[in-house]
Length: 105
Image 1 (cartoon, rainbow, N blue to C red):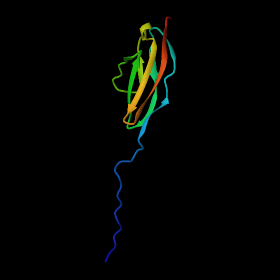
Image 2: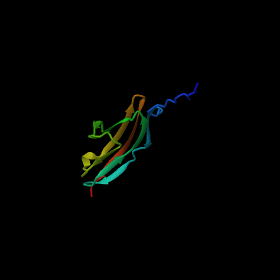
Image 3: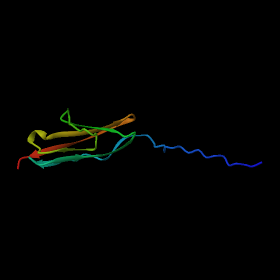
Image 4: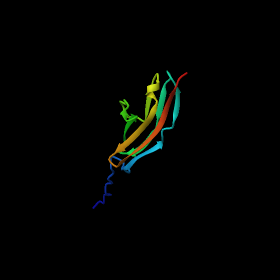
């Protein structure tokens, strides 16, 4: 009679703790000269991975890849305003906002 050790069973995926979105870095107010490039950046954590959406003065800002930044090239006065970033997943949502001011050179 030969004794065999019981085979160990391992999960092929690591269990990650589910977490609602949290901003690790938030938007900060910015002032940019007309014609320059503005870049607004956030860092978001959460699991499942949060969906990131941007808006400005209640208008959705184009952000094709859902990332934590937007770049506005050749800014003009009309780009001034309140920018909001909203991150959401099945567990909840978080948002942060900051003012972008475009100044004439």
